[in-house]
Amino acid sequence: MGFSPPTMVMESSELLLIPEGRATSNATRTAATTYDGSAFILRRGIVFNRIRFRAVSSTGSPTVSVVIYQVPGGHGSGTARLKASAHEIAISGAANHEVTPSEGSVLLEPGLCFVLFGRDSATGNATLRTYTIQPMDLHTANVASDAHPTTFTMAFTAGSPPSTFNPATETTASALDLALTVRLKKV
Image 1 (cartoon, helix red, strand yellow):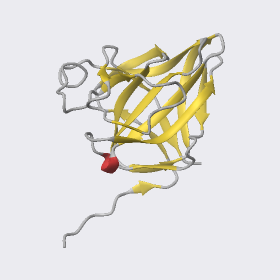
Image 2 (image 1 turned 90 degrees about the vertical axis):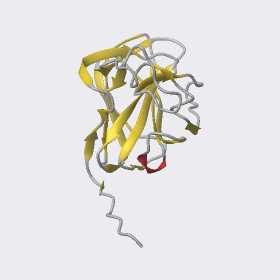
Image 3 (image 1 turned 30 degrees about the vertical axis):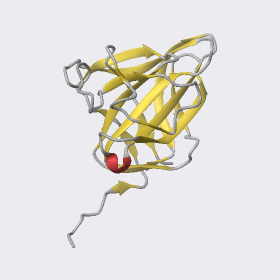
Image 4 (image 1 turned 180 degrees about the horizontal axis):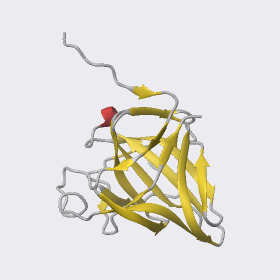
């Protein structure tokens, strides 16, 4: 019987997610109906009930979704399970947004998580704040078939994300190399 150190989980905190790929600068991305996703490193676990992100502009009356997945144990390979989702978030101009996941309070373990965002309205455009991720072979391009890309796209029906997905086999490595700037918070 071996010793396992306890997993540190912050009950009351805020956590800025750090992209797995090398972030080089601020950028923006107009949310599309094919969702953009990226892998983020969690140096510690967190219980959260708010997701924060920034819209920099909008036209029309767009709504967006933000969804967060994690492979059990925070691993980078295997089947990721839906942990948190927020849908039909109305975007009106430049503003910070703080939304409550449909699941309420959520626990993410240390390791990796996958954050996806996209437009779920049929009309309008919302441009969100992102990081630029340095394009690199084996990270964002020419990724081995048994490994997840650090930035990717994934198609699914707006407002109806799958309950699970495999980041290595059910995504397409993204040539845009962008990751949503996102914070998680417990209130």
